[in-house]
Image (cartoon, rainbow, N blue to C red):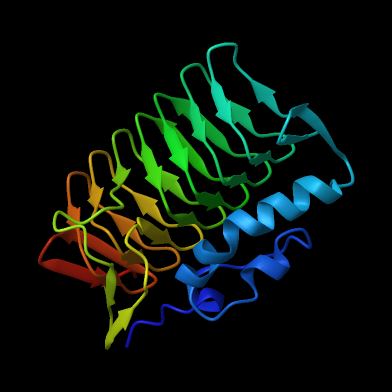
Length: 218
């Protein structure tokens, strides 16, 4: 059985984010995200300063002159937004993340030390601590029929959301050119070979070699 609960996918060591991650399933985090960000921005966060209206930034974060941040957004300490990065609203970036060239993020949470350095799209998604997206990997967030996303695990979970990208567990590695179809879940410490189309749920501590072959890590 593949455990897709929040506590099985992510270790939230941040007091800032703990109330948001105190949910059973990850799509519940997405539902709560916009209001939670607005509350944090209104109250202010210790150690964060206003980069612009509706944007808070932690110490040591860097933003290239050609990067774009659309509020509301929270940029963690030490995080780097490289040239051409596009943060498109309702985004929380944890500490020491990298958002690189032509990477677009909207309505998503990246925990600490996440790497999305080259040509990535991250829509309506959650990436766990230390997760890494290879160049060109994308989290597709809208089905072709535009119906609500259903998570297919040991049973079907109706999320009630039309837009969900991927939920990528702590320290998961997604290979170059992979496409996560809407509602894909990748467990902790799982590695995915390049160019694999991902659909459904993948157990933690696995190697995904193709759309039809997944083996345990040894």
